[in-house]
Length: 251
Image 1 (cartoon, helix red, strand yellow):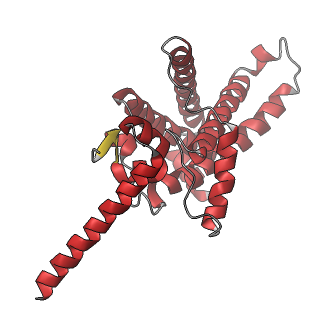
Image 2 (tube, rainbow, N blue to C red):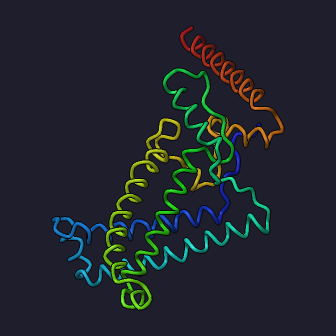
Image 3 (cartoon, rainbow, N blue to C red):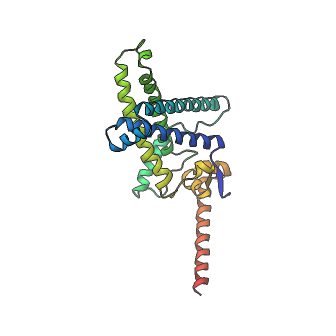
């Protein structure tokens, strides 16, 4: 087996970096308006020249984010329908089974964690949470930006509803990113101090075995059981080598 495996293309890496940048701008300009009375928000708004400038920046970043989201969905649809990509982000019944299995594993009721393909249930739930949240933000943001246009053919009650949804959904998406995603990308023991796969495009063999065993089995043309057995043998050899090195050092 190889030491590393290609996981993300250059296009996916650039897309992720682009979304990080737009997300940071949206969070900074959005939360400063939501919590406008806090000292930090007042300082930030004044540094940008006032709330009108903050709103212009927020709307510009929102427009860019929306276009990127639309492109992402169109490319994914074309990829699956025309280019025959595997719909690996679709949530299946097996993902819920894996979630239950891993709860049992963490409680000591299972010997091994659930086996996953290209994306595990954590990544799928997170992806769809952010994607659907992004669509809500895009729609409600458009209503708040152009309320007169939308109330020409929709009820005026849509505007206060959009305001509440935009504000609260933004906070939910922020908490998903700040809590769930950042933990999995930085603080999780499996990747600490940083999961660099999205920046390099490659993932180490050990993480492939631990997190994406079914995908690795398909790549290598071997069964998951064979890969786990090989992993145990490699770990045993490493321990023996370390023991011999320690014995030589002490001797």
